[in-house]
Image (cartoon, rainbow, N blue to C red; front, side):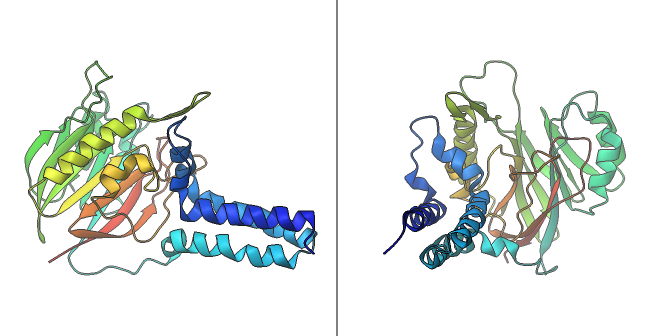
Length: 309
């Protein structure tokens, strides 16, 4: 006969497995609770550790067996991200994505740190007028091509053409707001359409998870990507959301996300989530990793992208 602790622990194990495998069962209608869960979904694996300890404490073999369910669900969802970097391959680009912070105390050191990762492309957000000349000067020698629109910019080893701003401003924002750009980069492996974006911030309030503007902006960006006529697309940005967050479905449903690497990028002091993203179409984001901290509240991330033939 099962004891009360065994029934409780078994039920919690089943619930954890359900949330890991189908987080969409948590509705978003009230307070966007579903999105909030999805932001921290990988950390739900810690519940397994707690339940394992309690199962040992109560000597419940049934509960221990039940824990195989959330372990399997977590492995299915995130196990692939733990695999090692497969190493460089042909037709690859290395890209760096970083929200440099509009209050960064040392933009020159930040620029040097990003360049030291030896990327082909660097995408930056929160570029302010006072710091922009510093980034341009430090990056000029190694990245002779660049374009800036509003507070976002793209630096490249290769020629850039067709640069234009992207209108991803939600209707509720009335002030001057330009946080997206699109450009074509002529790489040795063919042209790619490079998108750089900074979606609106989200907030956790007493009323719930406030992501309405972010979700609206993601929808606008998703439609722009869907209409893109260049076959290969690379999106780099501070999207203020994880790839598991349903608010980013307009992008995740159209683009490939990283196959390997967690690369939690925010907050820099105690990284809990990767809200800085690299996604691609007609290309594979093979691996993503964080770079050392700069003067920003975000960690930079670097990714290797394999372009299709």
